[in-house]
Image (cartoon, rainbow, N blue to C red; front, side):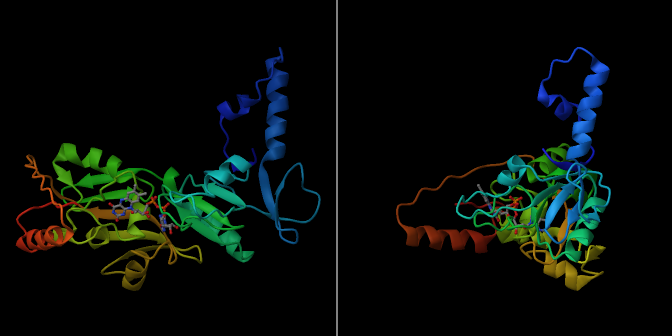
Length: 291
Ligand SMILES: Cc1cc2nc3c(=O)[nH]c(=O)nc-3n(C[C@H](O)[C@H](O)[C@H](O)COP(=O)(O)OP(=O)(O)OC[C@H]3O[C@@H](n4cnc5c(N)ncnc54)[C@H](O)[C@@H]3O)c2cc1C
């Protein structure tokens, strides 16, 4: 496993050696790990450089709070998605430990024209979160809920909707619109729109975003909303990951229903079903409609 940044004791123990002398064992392991840590990028050969392989000239990587992986297991995991149709192999995967990591890596790789792709839960179906010979930024490691107040929640883009809902419901609050499947990342669905059973009332998920923090292709952190950097705000929401990386979002919250009555209607012809669905939507009687 080749990686840059902090490393864990568990990983150091994966080798399973049986040396009696703990001190020498630790010293050997530490030197092995140190020699495997990426320290730079060899621009002419376009390969990562570890301290063990550092023979020619290379550009030093910035220090990271998270980890940059180049091992086959990590690369393979992000070379696939929910569709299993498209497979693109990157040259590294960043699991950021902070927003600064994303800024540092974007600033570094853009100098060498290495492409990047953001990835949330990888539930898109046609390679949207993959990049050939580039760096995948796996946002799922940025997954903190920063605050929940009466009308809004501030969350990292890697938080999944189910986790946000678990935190808001005890306050009798909910995001106005949820996707039917809620194990998707907030950054991932804000990049595609996010449609759900309450959309006929509240719009899509991106209609319910008050502010986003975005790292641009130049590696700059921007705050944007309807009132600040509006062009970027509108480009990045529903922007399919092409207009910047959403790292944090302020999501609108509304009062959650305390009781629910569910009606199940069964149809055996499509025309009647779609006619009734349009009727129910225009009627606005129900706050959730799903097919
Ligand atoms: C079982 C299932 C059920 C679904 N149900 C619904 C549904 O009810 N309603 C609905 O609208 N959609 C639904 N979808 C589609 C889903 O919303 C999209 O595929 C969404 O992009 C998945 O989120 P993700 O976290 O997996 O994103 P990924 O697949 O990881 O990424 C999707 C796109 O967003 C980009 N991206 C990811 N994170 C960021 C970020 N932080 N900043 C910028 N760009 C980013 C990626 O580069 C990629 O282009 C469903 C998909 C599945 C597989």
